[in-house]
Image 1 (cartoon, rainbow, N blue to C red):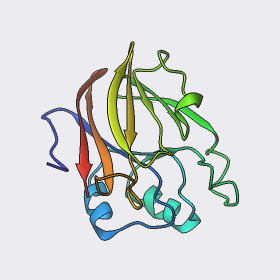
Image 2 (image 1 turned 90 degrees about the horizontal axis):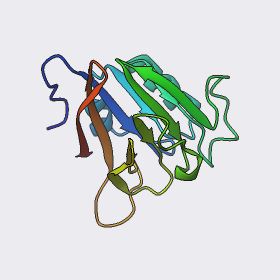
Image 3 (image 1 turned 30 degrees about the vertical axis):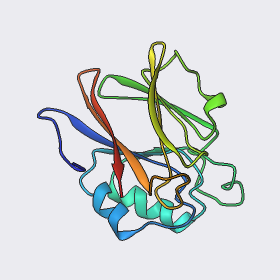
Image 4 (image 1 turned 90 degrees about the vertical axis):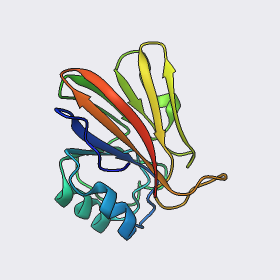
Length: 157
């Protein structure tokens, strides 16, 4: 269930490949998040500002974002810590330092998946706006607490 928080946990919502479209359903799911992570292909400066107004956010540039100005904080790779959990984010999976962060997040494929890669949890939230394959639009929700990933869920929009 989107928006359910495990007691004591913080809710991180991961999205990617919005391509200039933030649906009402997506905005509902993002509401109340403690942190947002965008894995690239935002393609809208106004959408980036909308997301920044909802919650603290980390993001990266996707292959379609080079024509937009989101400010100096967005690059090809983002690495940060949140509630004791280390994160690495890149649009392309091959740009991730897998094994060097607790959670590695990528986008680009528009197909959601969660898998263990050695010491890292690899998450692709799929596309929140233009999915590929049989599944519809998706995001990922991560519950974190005290350096632990308590749960990960792919949420259908």
